[in-house]
Amino acid sequence: MYPIERFLGTLKRYVSNRAQPEGSIAEAYILKECITFCSMYLDGIETVHNRRERNEDSGECSKGLTVFTQTARPTGCRRIDGELSDELRDIAHWYLLYNTLELE
Image 1: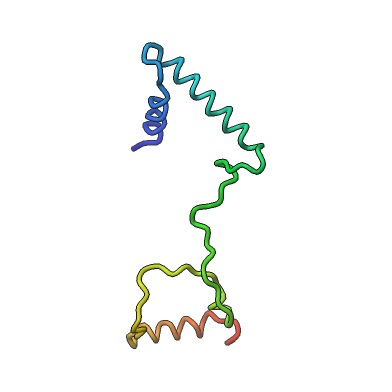
Image 2: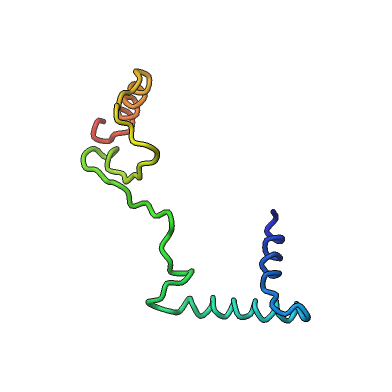
């Protein structure tokens, strides 16, 4: 769906008086703009402009080599066996050797 179609759909939802839809749309749009403008200057109230991000990365952080000190949020199921194939182990080993500052 194109952005203009989405915006027009939003404007159509503003209609409350079907006898005069243009005035109803204009009134609701101005009201929304005023509320948005005023909410930028409100302190202590959660608004669209001062809300925390949904996907804020505050995952686990470990200590040690710089490669492992980056925060990460685990995804998917946790594997209990923890076995790597020889190919994956070699790739991980190569990555550590070439991307760790402490090993240079």
